[in-house]
Length: 428
Length: 205
Image (cartoon, rainbow over all chains, first blue to last red; front, side, top):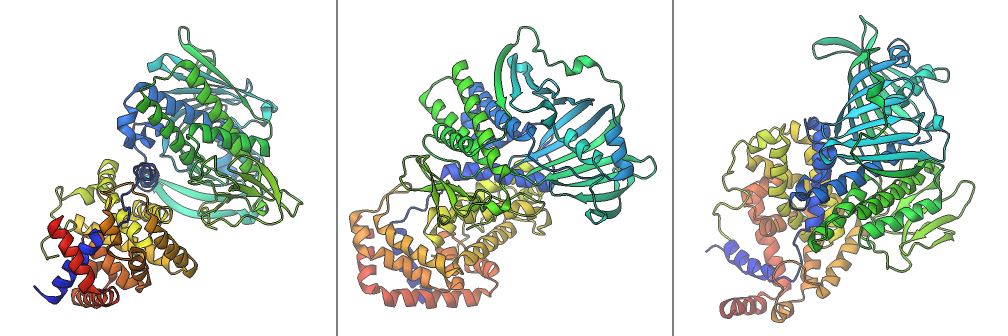
């Protein structure tokens, strides 16, 4: 044996006895898997068939085999997403790309493909139909979502379950509720008076599916829109949007057909006969600090006393997965009442987290709830500085709130940032 | 430890897994499942703090997911070298912040009161064999290259050749660095005492 081998032999024996827990945690492994696969999808391309909620939980197959678990997680996630995505994020209006934009703004009807990626979850794909004013039908393969913003209503029809989830938006003027991404885009493109020339960037030419297209980028305070259009016809071919809010949201629309013939019945929000109906009201009035406190309370209840690792969809769905795991482990099936309760909590979470959307950068908002439990005393989990004040409002793990002259100093706290095209939450 | 094929060098069961993983999500998912435990253990051993280690592991795999398409390697051996290079750079970047290093020392010191969760708990005799927090601190005091070499060798089961590719050195330089580091640790922790105890317990236990 060489000297090195002898030394190594001794050292290996020594280290093998070292009292240190180096076993990876299953929970982190599963949660990270969802994020990593979402990143993979973003880079390589979307999965072809499965809806996002299934993909997010593919790693938890053993717990997700039970239909009740699947439905629980998917529906609750849907509820949070609905609150986040269909309520205005306070963004200002912006500008048009003239010729191509006109086709979008003037459309009475439209049919297109849509891909949506929200805050760490895998890409979702929809076939989408639009009927002016403000009516949509989106099909994912397993679920049909129909929204009618003039009625303030979204219905999600799940044929396999013979079930309908109805969400009614209350608390804000209906014309203030952005129906979905296409509607937001139309609003953005329609209001072209405030745009400055400097906000536009010519991207040049390329080919999309063999067709020569020309691209423009428009960067507003609310979102960055990249539009590729066919110079021969003046029609948009692909439109990509990155919304500068939390959670980071990216939307791509393609394969446009405008002013196609569509039947009114496709947009009927009446639940189909013989379907079980579950209804929820969604408060769309402006979120306040107390709503965020309620959201943290709901999170800790769903999470068995824990707060989410991150203030986004991925963080909350991780808690919901844990909740489902506990119920499966207990051998408890989910009753309709359980489902209703979880949906209400999910809606409360979505509403509360919306409050963070309203905070400007100057609020210096931070989240430090990762790994923290509700019963920890004197542990700040969120803080921000209200406008025009020098003191911070600090929310603690026990859900008490107080004022502080200085921001808490907690290692690992994540600054809440408006998600632009390339920025990320920064470490403290 | 000998130079038999290590875990990282064992022939890949599926030779084209890495190639497929560049475009196929199920293949990529398999790669993740296969390498997460190794990377996590490596980071835990280098950082001594679970929360920090998990943050770094997250950074590593998100980085891999972002760049795998542009990765030019074809085999799992290539992939593993690339993966541990990313992990090593991420850990080193973390350790370069002195403030954090101080916190890691404190975490290492706390590990005396380690609460067993995972693998077989050490016997009281093993716990008393050495001043383990002092050993951990000694490891943390190594420069980042030597620390990476030791940890890759003993906690990621890498050969000297593989470590050389990760830390951008020759295999000979890695062997020299290992020998020098082990000598230093042996001198510091009185090898006669610990090796006799360790060997004795190994034989009787």
